[in-house]
Length: 317
Image 1 (cartoon, one colour):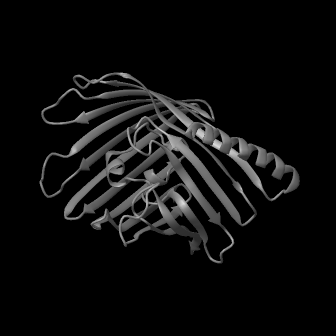
Image 2 (tube, helix red, strand yellow):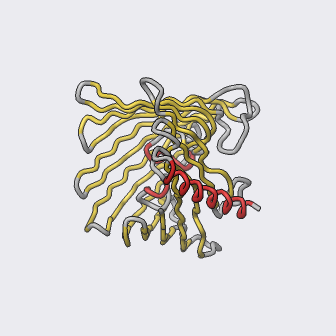
Image 3 (cartoon, one colour):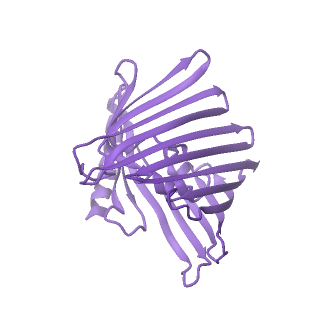
């Protein structure tokens, strides 16, 4: 049923786009999407190697007028969850409000560099452990305002969102709303630094959920450097992690990458932190087709066999 509904929505959108393109120059609607097919070799004892569809997203986006835009998309994954084939984005952007832009609906809230980067634009196949654990879910329902401005010669970007705090496709579970704030400063053309704060409560019992993140990114010519630190507190449990990524464009179609990330799921217990090296080699067949290859080595004491080798083909439009 969902498949036929999705076909209907896309077909209707394409038909609408054709009508508007000939009758209203202000309105533009276009289909968007991407898919990621992956093969994983897992060296863990008893693990099975195999193919998966890591992500498949299809949607529509466009401008209703010069002041109003929208985005709507479905996503399916191999994840065994109730929302593995569900609405991904469903929001409206309003650009005509004085002093700022507004977004209302279900969207990816702005916390952390890795989270705000579109999935199809990520350099490595998997996100850092700290992002996967502390920024989950990545989308929510609510409203957000944002603004770009200059402080003397420094470009600044800020956003403030008020969201349910229950995740995508979910009703609010308590009477509290979560607040997400992000501020980014670009003192140099190729360098930005900033931070994010998440203040909320989760679940029917309204358990405290707090996050604080710092980020930096430098991208110049063929070199890419980025790093993040995120601290989280769920009720009384404190958690933290960080990563640093370096990439170099060997030639226009080839990029080599290395990332080191650390994740501590409980600062209080003082147990061993999860450490991981990820090496990547990306090959761009063209601007819309990317072949990623990653090798992940997890660092434990004593060492065990649990490394991953992944190859992934991504197509986007």
